[in-house]
Length: 268
Ligand code: BTN
Image 1 (cartoon, protein in one colour):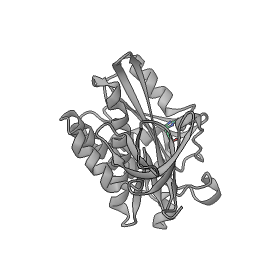
Image 2 (cartoon, rainbow, N blue to C red):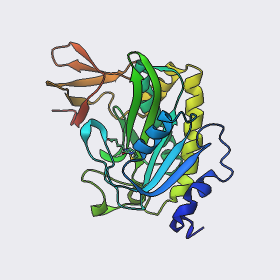
Image 3 (cartoon, helix red, strand yellow):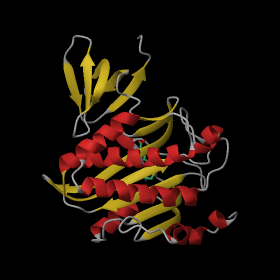
């Protein structure tokens, strides 16, 4: 229905209408403009809100990416979403949440497009090496106990060309048509709930296996930029904690839990 998205006050209602999920999206907040959807979801976490609160925005003034980067999106074109998870998690389980969020997005995007989308470790969704989606997970934790986790997802939906940061693409560019953000958001929340339920059942191994199926990184030559050094080698896959293993040219394996990687041409 045209025009629905223009009525910003109603976006939350549009998304919530007969959504049919149990937890994810039981409370939906939608803003015209804010600093970061992650901040609002984090505040709800501090206030003791229940798992599944979702925050959407048309525009972020201080959108954050991983590793201190900014996340840019033109107003009203893309999907900017954060959701709150409050289950008792161990710190090592948090990065699995990030991988899982990327999986939910990719599964949803694949339903629309037969194109080859892949996940670049840990959580970028890429199409022909161009970024379609990023995930930023933040948490409130003490020692080994996690109080809550906020998963922030940015999907380039209808922004095109110069509206996108360099090296990025969008669903509109891939599909050649506009995509309803409300419809995409509704489907995505259902997919996230499914995946959250899998996780509750402790199916980490299955999730990792599923992640591997979409991995654009496994088998590639990569350079990993770590805090203090760079390593180069072949990515051999992720383990059950979501860490990436790289076989260096001297044959030694390294396990990367955080950081940034770059895909190289396989001959380099
Ligand atoms: C990355 O690829 O570096 C992660 C990007 C995450 C962006 C999303 S947009 C919604 C949420 N709010 C933020 O400030 N960041 C995340």
